[in-house]
Amino acid sequence: MRLSDKVAIVTGAGAGIGEAIATGFAGEGAAVVILEVDEARGERVAEAIMAPVEERCFKKPMSRRSMKSMLL
Image 1 (cartoon, rainbow, N blue to C red):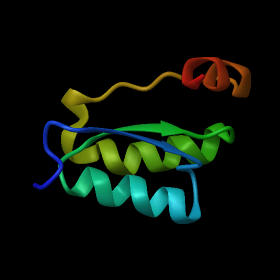
Image 2: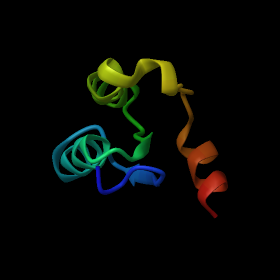
Image 3: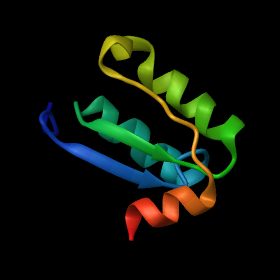
């Protein structure tokens, strides 16, 4: 677990490269923040990542505006 005690913020984590990065980082022990404007895709990835560690995870739907203000 090379990334235990680390937090990764992954934008576009609902598909493609972002999904692969989020899944890989979670597999290496990182806490992963999934940022995705398509709620259904983000939810699908979050559920897959959270399955083995659900007690340590939470999710909060966010709008594009909310994400932008949080990151800037």
